[in-house]
Length: 548
Image 1 (cartoon, rainbow, N blue to C red):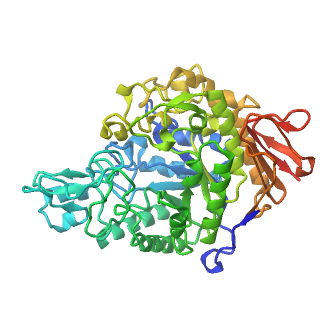
Image 2: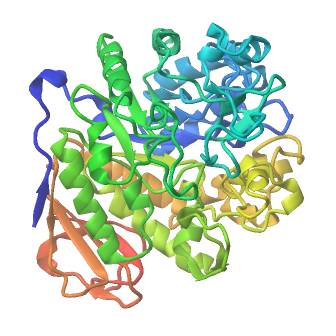
Image 3: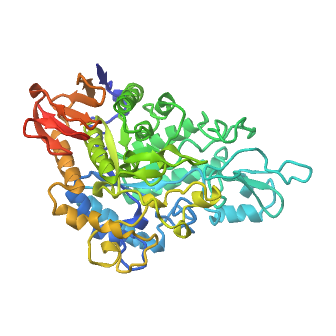
């Protein structure tokens, strides 16, 4: 079976293939990357000082989580000012230095734009709360009168993504919509002033030299007109997201980006019911890229991975786009823990990518290493989340009193949230905060067992997960431009072994525990997540690349 990507419409691309079509981009959660000033919070000078790590790793670019001024209720996703950089991270001068240094090292830089909502401390929202109902200031947001005899009930039954009602009442009795935390009021994208504001934001940062944007919850900008009740408030609310009007916004954004004389990208974070829905955002005149979360959502199962890859290539390629693959980010449990989950805890509120239970860390690490080679061998671009290159597990036992994620509080402490994948990185051993900061008092604490994952040690270990990442990225770079955008699935004779071929490259993934004998005609080993046996058999679980 061959799954191929058709050639993009020639009118929608430049003569030279854009850098982002096959780039490997490294996601930096800035608060947890590297702290330069000893306040326990990562910052831009800290990132700049560690760029050599990313250059040595071999990535093509950096996606920077929000670093705008923010009260920090959702650690940057509650933006108070989209036009500058928070002093906590070094301010705009530190950003300009970082950007120049990243470009000097050949790294592209993507910002994170948050268009669905802002901070309750944004000047626009402060003005709206102080204004009269029905005023132009309130029209920038979704304010409505309440239901009930005295307006004491929310305007509809919508729920917040973080838990609890999606409405909060202000002093004069009206309610405002917040699809996330109450500190994050939703904009009303039916108001031209809102659209104009964000186009100006994009231009400002493009003019400063950034190479693209990741778009936070890109599917949620518009709500169904009239804001009707949804039949099942606990289920996916089709009235609260994925409305047809959003596509015109992205046509305008694509035209804005394409007007520049360099290749810029827009990457959507889009959660929709089907891959076909996702493909609608990737038409030639809309977003160049969107994360393919379907693969991330798969459990450790060969048939599930194969079916997801086929769905993605068939639907996304049909839109003339290449897939943007990822297995981890700042919102889900780390791959080592997801793939090492051998016994699930029962829970009233379970998000599939954040399930808890008994973890076999060694098994999870072996599977995560194998998944890396599967991912990097696929056609398209790949996004890696910081710390994945170290093989970090999720910190599932973070003390409850130290949790900061609003999901934890709004869910009534039922959903533990995302803090466990946001722990500050370990760089060295034998120093405060494992080299992350000069103070041991980091914004989220680090467990003692982080010492074994320190980057400095892993660079010195030939078989470390960090060295595996660097070697796989080196081979991928050497093959860049030489492999087709097509997959041929190979027959393995086993349901727990996948193998695909792209031109000279063959990728074999053993999902089970039993060794697999690789046919000699498939080529010679060039990279493996676990050392093949002397007779050429692969241990399980593991993955390998062969060149023919």
